[in-house]
Image (cartoon, rainbow, N blue to C red):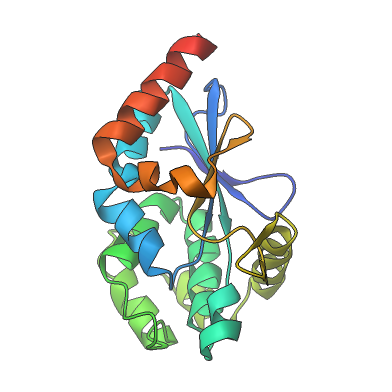
Length: 199
């Protein structure tokens, strides 16, 4: 799947840039609700529609849980995901990180673990990728993405809209309807309706 850093330098686009439906996702790599979304909820549905070139996804990768829980695992994971874009492997690595997500309270995304998980993605490991992970090469991207997330709203008294939050063609799915994100069949039908209206 095509993937690139958006011109704004704070989000990652996956899918055909010409797709008429855009899903903007706000996620934190340490967030267990994001893991649920990505592994058994709407995530696999999105992959299906991306492959059909009907949907493109913009990811804003937040790291607010580091500040709330301690550690720097979210920042390190976001940096590693940004490095994976350079290898054209963001999508696969993103999936692997959520499939192997440590407990939220455990600051488990250390350099060694991130590189170990990267070995599960064929063609991702390289001297340049490994160095980018260890050196936090994309620290500016990590910080900028977190600022965009924090500016995108407030949830439970905290900056940022909560994770995961989805916007479909600019419409943010309200918190009270966020259960839609975790029910693959409902999310599929919702996207199909949006796609039908957009074509």
